[in-house]
Image (cartoon, rainbow, N blue to C red; front, side, top):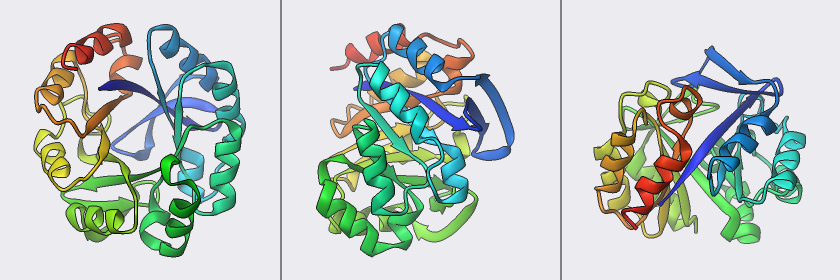
Amino acid sequence: MILLPAIDIIDGKAVRLLQGDFDQRTDYDSDPLDAARRWVDAGARALHVVDLDGARTGTPANVRHVERIASTLQVPVQVGGGLRSLESVRALLESGASRVILGTAAFRDPDFLDAAVAGHAEQVVVSIDAREGLVAAAGWTEQMQLTVSEALADLQARGVRRFVYSSIDRDGMLIGPDLEGARSFAQGLRESFVYSGGIGELADLKALAELGEPKLSGVIVGKAIYEGRFNVADAQALLDGFS
């Protein structure tokens, strides 16, 4: 299992939101590349980048920053936010992203999802962002009447192999992971997923690792490392201990 530091970009800056609320924003780095370099220098083996401008508008707005990060640092970079067309998917993959993360469009545009999977199956990840057991969309601003289990079953039937499971209720709260949600998600999954939401200390990572779930391939962490709750090297060493 690997740690994936999160780099969320708004207005060209690395920021963090509280529970996905754009009005509760904290700026950390004026240049996202500075944040990316810091985490890689500290031992990160992969990065999780979210174009929050794109998530809000439906069109990627920070491809240039993704290209700078991917071309400068020698680690895989998975990127999401505003991916609602094949042109956007291709643009990000051509910019150096190793994988693209689909959100809203994966649920609302089945033709696009099918085309993306058909053309880039190994590089397509779908993020299932959960709030009280239901899927949220449009940068977490809209609640869908679709349960997580229903979404997972449908997406796998359409050929999606990799997922991010995000607990919106815990995002940025530093209150610990949704262990039951992660366990339940894994039970309905055929391949692999990455968990996100609520990580506030090393004990939280340990709790996830102790689930002993082989389908859990990584953990996304943001606020905790930006605020120095723990460092990347110690976190990855802890996760390596459960390999």
